[in-house]
Amino acid sequence: MNVARVENLTVSAYTIPTDFPESDGTYDWNSTTIVVVEAEAGGARGLGYTYADTSTATLINDHLKKIVIGCDAMSVRGAWNAMVHSIRNLGRPGICSMAISAIDTALWDLKANLLDLPLVKLFGRARETTPIYGSGGFTSYSIERLQKQLGDWAKQKIPRVKMKIGRDANLDLARVAAAREAIGDDVALFVDANGAYSRKQALAQAEEFSEIGVTWFEEPVSSDDLEGLRLIRDRAPAGMEIAAGEYGYDIDYFRRMLEAGAVDVLQADATRCGGFTGFFQAAALCQANHLSLSAHCAPALHLHIGCAVSCFRHSEYFYDHARIEKMLFDGVIEPVSGELRPDLTRAGLGLEFKRADAQKFTIQ
Image (cartoon, rainbow, N blue to C red; front, side, top):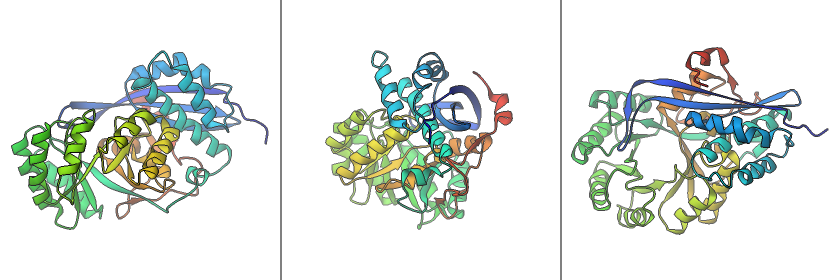
């Protein structure tokens, strides 16, 4: 086929209010901003997005757009390399990586659409479905709201659920016990402190949580404290895995985390770590270190790549993002028995942007 060049790149941003105030161990929010990128070539269109500040959209418009337009749409990694090279003096972590992530996922979707292939077939399929865990249980929730949300996921046969902790160590124990009561003994219970605890506090909590059957302790201390994460990992109860990595923006971040022996399971987020191209880099590191990889948030975006990565454990079915993706995109897959199965009748990600529905949330 003739070389298809990227002809246009458009970006827009939308802020969607939460349906209830949300908080975790260290942060509060009442809305979420999504930056949507659309790439065009050869009569096809690709869709990508990131959950980020509107400054991400500005960076794409003012800087990255001119880097990508004219690139070979079939050579996504070439465009990725050009984008990374172009932001040398702007700094790789943060907004730059999130902007690159949104464009990279749009370019992979574009390539798959040009080839009329589901994205998972372009990547190469390793499994039929992407396992998920229900994620929410915000610290702003009452016990009743917490139990209903997690209990409803258990009733939907999602075999693992995660809740937020970290605001009050004593209250956390009561909330975790209430969550266990709501989901029963057969559903795995995960907790996420978002780095709110000190090292010794996290160790003490780990012992208590283990008695309630918690098997996953995410960011018990700050993800910047690699020594602390290693300490918790070494001394936590045997049946409890330590996880972190959601704030990784590049392969060097993940390399340092794995070299420190900081986690049992690495987390990566394709909306932050450089898109699907960066996610595959994180997966390669995990395979080399005999660790599993778990996707952070954005469940619709991680569906196809979750089926393509051999060391993949599961994807976070984050309540806020699952809600937004259903509002803004056609083709979002509903979970069945704790798994998402790609629709192989649709090319690319299988998503179509509902522009009219998104219009009322436009900020850029």
